[in-house]
Amino acid sequence: MAFDLAKRINEHLAEETCRGVVVTHGTDTMEESAYLADLLVINDRPVVFTGAQRTADDPAADGPRNLSEEIRLANSQVTSGLGVVVHFDQRFHAARDVTRSHTSRTDAFASWNRGYLGEIDGERFVLSRRPGIPRKSFEAKAIEPDVDLIRMVQGADGRLIRCSARSGAKAIILEGFGRGNATPSVADAVADVISAGVPVCVASR
Image (tube, rainbow, N blue to C red; front, side):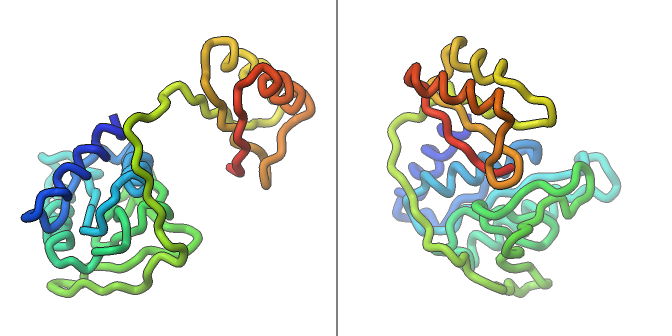
């Protein structure tokens, strides 16, 4: 679980001799785990996530290079104080900005709004920018897993909202159209479940 991973990272960083932490992770959910770690890791030492797009027996496997560069990056301390970063294909991104942008290419991650933090150029680590917003971290002893994410699509009605609340969701995240819009049917359902005590948070998709 991503929460347990974040706790383990904190435990390692609490050790005086630890210079940083490297994490190998599957690419399908890497951005989610890295983002949660960025929120929960309370130490400013380097934390770097990476993975592989190609299998280990592929003649052009990218995993070994990514791992080698990840270790060098964490040890260099260039990412110290930047929060958790995701390193892939010689570029490293802030966990708060990065998203998976391709299903199969080796440069599978991008930071659309602000761009990547830096890159590895041979033996050099080039830091192009620092995160524009000061990082905030939170100490949490537990996390609520029963939170549903519901995405708006054309023709959506309130069924999924009501079903989520009836089946035990402690909160609902509504991924709305545009800047957080929803259909009238969904809006009515949101009003009903809020009245029943289930918080609904709206985000743009």
